[in-house]
Amino acid sequence: MLKKFLVAPLALLAIMTVTADAKSPAELNDLEIAHVAYTADLIDIRYAYLALAKSKNPAIHKFARTMIRDHSAVNDQALALLKKLKATAQDNFLSQSLNAGSDKLVEEMSQLSGAAFDRRYAENEFAYHKSVNGLVEGTFIPNIEHPEVKALFEEALIIFRAHEKHAEKMAAAVGS
Amino acid sequence: MSRRILALKLIVAALAATIAFHPASPSIAAEGNRVVIAIQKFKFVTSDRQIKPGDTIIWVNKDFVPHTATAKDGGWDSGSIAPNAKWEMIVKEGISPAYFCAFHPSMTARIDLRPGKTTRSAPK
Image (cartoon, rainbow over the protein chains, first blue to last red):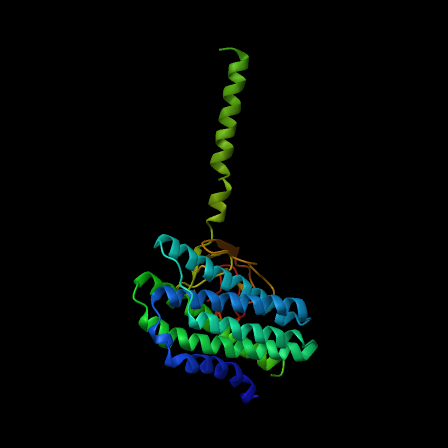
């Protein structure tokens, strides 16, 4: 069980380590960090829509709907702030790596069905939130310079920590 | 004074007397206290105020994502409370005081329910 939970965090860590020679997440500027966060939100929304299409488990559906609702709200806040600051998020190596990783995972999960899909989705949601939350708390928030961007990330982290707890219980319930 | 004017005056006087002896509904609703519970940073921020049957609780969502206030036993439920929106409930005797957010189950709270003037102790 533990090994399964570690798959996604290690994958994310690998992304960050492999590219560390060129650039590390700690070197990203505010607009690049905003792009990573926006991308990470979109990825989780994508997983949620896949879950709604494939799963028949009401608990999985309930969680997926919350992911769509909350991550969309966070991204709306981020876009509104960028508009206010007259800035544009900047694509970067980490956003691209996250997208590449999610393409593979969507392909993998698309081949699963029933309880096998539910387990994979739930374990990934727990691992994904844990990994991204660690990155946001340990690297992004300390490095963000603009106070309003920092405040938004601090508020978003509270939301994502609640998701992490929810995902952990969901993963345990579906037998991950 | 014509009979018509006299009749009109009598009607006005009767209406005034009716209003005086039967206050409008806001006065009746004001029998209980109104207590605000903010939903902020994924917590139900309760006041120290004790709540008794007949009081009105107003949940105000100050986060930018929707929440709910839902009884653990399913006996009452706000449904989705949008950001910056509120939902209120008149507390009835015997309701479940334990509740949570159905969207975010790690958010839990409990109404500090105390007996009202004319009621027995509500179950905790």
